[in-house]
Length: 231
Image (cartoon, rainbow, N blue to C red):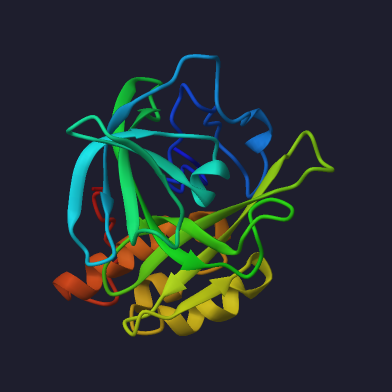
């Protein structure tokens, strides 16, 4: 959502001590995510961005996948501990422990930005949220999780949001994927011609955006598909 094979998507990447990170087919495989694990408080390297964009480094105490979208607890270098909601700061990030495709331990930075969602991540919560940023560049892609409380096998679903160069967020759901992607990637013909095929589906959108941003930055032959290295 890492977080996904959709999370191979690159998803996202889940903090292993906080929740499981299985590979998924669309929403399949999210059933193992349980939220905050155990009783031990986990502190990891992180930062917050205050309202004027200043970056403050310290420690983050991550929560569950949807708790992370509603508030975050930050410990400054001086030891001051404080919780922040999306209205309080511009965003935050932290270093998460992940398992790579070979099952080996690794770390990856997760970055969140304050945003307004179309619906809250859990019942009766605010629609002012932190969204996880999957890719940044000509197109910025965010992944947003929503609890599904009547389905214990798949307790979360996800939806993507795209941010254009004017900073406007646009939701893209599975049934919109092909139409929106065809328009979005129309200039990169090597990608456009593959949309809808295996590995070019909704669950692969994070990698597609990353590869598109790589093409925009490098301007190699539009008919030649190149895979960008994940940062």
